[in-house]
Structure formats: C-alpha cells, structure tokens
Length: 430
Ligand code: UDX
Image (cartoon, rainbow, N blue to C red):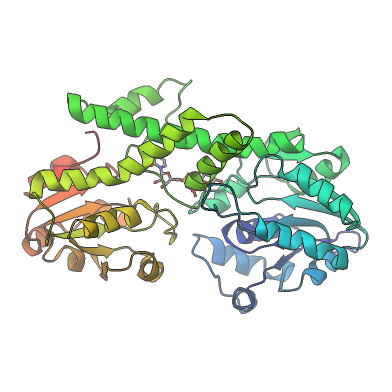
C-alpha cells in the first residue's frame, strides 16, 4: 500500500458490506472489513465466503492481498480515514427502520476516532438520519468526522455487476470536499455521479425502490384483471415496455416481491411520510396488493383441487428470487403458511436456499430435488424462477404426482410445452 493511501473501512459484512468491500478492493483500494460476528470474520480469514452471491468467492480470492478482516472497530478507525457503514437496518414492528446497529457504531466512536474521518452511510436509513447523525457526532465530540450518504443499488444475485456497472453513483454530503473524496473512490467506474445534499441522497434510495415496487404491484394488478378479461399480461407488459417512457424492466407479473429491500423500504418510506404528517396512499396500496398477490395462488389451487385439506402441494423454489439463498420476505414463506393453514401438506425444493429454509418455513417437508418434491403431490407451484426449472422432468413428474397440475407463479414456463405433457397449466395473468 502506498503510504499516502489509507485503507477504506467497511463496518458490517452482510451482503452489502461484503460486496462493497470486495468491489472496492477490485478497484484497487486496500479495504479493512469489520463485523461483530467473529465467526464470519474467521470464515473470511480462512478464505471462505459466508453468503451466497455469484462471483463473490472468486473476487474475494482475487483481492485477498488487499483485504483484511477484523472484529475491532479501533483497528478500522486506526487504519482508515474513509469508513463505510453497511450494517443492516431491519424493519421494526411499526414499519420504521431499526437503526440500533447504526447508533451502536456511532456510540463507540468517541473512544476510537482520532484524527479526521469520513463516515459513509451505505445502509438504507430514513430520510433525515444523516442530519441527526451529524448533530449527534457534534454533540458527543466524537472528533473531526464528516458524514456522507452513498446509498447502494445492488440486487442480490447480480450485486457485483451492479457495483461495477452502476446506472449512477449518488453522493450526499454537507461538505463537498468530503463528498468529492468518496466520489473519487469510484473514479474507475464509468457512471454518472450525482452529488447532492444528504436528505436528497437518502430520499433517492427510498424513492427508487418504492417506484420499482410500485411498478411490480401495478403489473400484478394488471395481471389479475387480464385473468378476468382473457388478456395475456406477458404480452401486455411487452407492449407497455416498448414505450420508452415506461421501459421494459420490472414488469414481470408474479406472486409478489420479496427480499431484504423492497418490502422494508416501501414500509419505511410510508412510515417516514406518515411521521412527517403525510399519508402516502399509493404505497399503502402497493403493500396491500403485494400481500394479496402472494395468497392468490391458494385460490387458484382451490379452483382446481377443491378444499386443500390433506392435499399435498409442492413448492418449486423458496428463495425470494433466483441466484440467491435469501428467504427474507420471500413469497414462499407466506404461501407455505397459508397452505398449511388450509390443512395442506407442503413439500419444497430449492437449488440453493434449503439450508436457510429449515428455519424459515417450519412444517414444510424439504426435498433434495424436483422429483421428490413432486412425488405424491396434487399440484406443483413454481415460486422462484431458477434456471433449472426451465427444463422440468415433465414425464417423470407426471408419473409421480397424484394430479398433473402446475401453477406457474412467475410466468416462467412454456404453457404449451406443459400442457402438451398432459398437465393443467395456470400462470399469473396469462
Ligand atoms: C432490490 C433493488 O433492485 C436494489 O436496487 C436495491 O438496492 C435492493 O433491492 P433485490 O431485492 O436484490 O434488489 O432484488 P430485485 O431483483 O430488485 O427483486 C426484488 C423482488 O421483486 C423479487 O422478489 C423479484 O422476484 C420481484 N420482481 C422483480 C417481480 O416480481 N417482478 C419484476 O418484474 C421484478
């Protein structure tokens, strides 16, 4: 390391922190990653990757020499001037973001922060948090610390590509010099940099996620109407997407959005608005449509099978989307509980998420492959559009299932092929 160039600190080594740290190392920076979870740190020190993210193990390996891992905050602040905070901010029962982990870091600063530091917020925090943190830092005389908001727009499963090829880099700061130092970290990336104040940067993150979630709930409602009037939502979405003002993305109808960001961020933005006296009606509907969408599959199953008591339903896919082992807010969890609540037996297979599923979907019989999930089932529901499901062993499945019924919760399968194999096929809005 060049003596003039200090390492970059990253506090909180979850999905966002680890991808950010590793990609910053890939950009040539030395990175010091810190987490309170000693097990995670020891795995990383041994060259193991504690989360599933395509390409991440290889990138970690490639940049090992530029990365250090520690459980000590002191070490990070001693080695780094610019320190990213990437701890998680889960929703509380009121829908507000839980900032306790962020404030835990801040409360430790007076003892560890000497000299000048730039604290960069990667975690999604409510609009206004940066301003509060700046006053808190001043109040506790934590030292000479600038605060910069630099929200992430990483999708699980494609997080590395999203980091390396961002649509934009958003930097919110009170001190443009601190903002420019953070922007300079990304100078090798070919992306526009939007420099603004802290609350605006915080709002860009929430507004972007809430808009995308709105797009999904919108197309899901169009799908539900398509079912009633005999239209095909996949073609409707294509036709809409060809209008460049609408764009083709995030118009895939299905059984609802999940994951660690959309549900939490939409609820938090609604709450932020509510706390400031504004009732964000549109977001209330976006959330409600999403909740109902997860349950619509139950009606479809009842239409074909009658009462679901003692029926066996196979779920194909559990993760909230493909290429991740993440089950947070996954539609599969609500669907499985609804089905079990109606007296059905639920079996499930997922290519990657099974180890996490044991805790998340209690009462579901977890299977090692599609055929064991299908065996003895009265219906199979495709919940996550994993590549492997594009080519289902239809002939064998038909032999093993009690009843040849496939509900395609992601409009991922070819209806003609499924029907030609002797199944009843139903998608979402097609
Ligand atoms: C999202 C944002 O895209 C990212 O910018 C942000 O930083 C974190 O949240 P992620 O949660 O990883 O990323 O997944 P994403 O690919 O956006 O999908 C979210 C959910 O929406 C998934 O459950 C997915 O199945 C669903 N979805 C997405 C749809 O139902 N239809 C679509 O057209 C697109």
